[in-house]
Length: 119
Image (cartoon, rainbow, N blue to C red):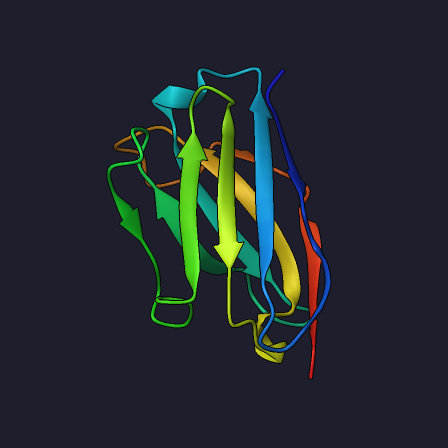
């Protein structure tokens, strides 16, 4: 049974930092590309970052580029999201997801962790 479990969310002031973790089990983690997404109340889910199975390739949308960094440790089956210079508009539930290479859709999703940025 595949499980993705996020942690590290919380309440932070604008300009602060948080580091999210996503621990994976039940799958060959090093074979999966990983992504982070977020969803704010009343809004659609938004892509935040992705990293290739090897960690050699990353991609970010303009909304977080330069502030967020995705990384992974395949020895720990964990993917991270370092978030700096946080803004109130970054407030959302953040979820990680796993996708086989060459696939468009993500296969597995975590339940998410709440990030709240106060102004």
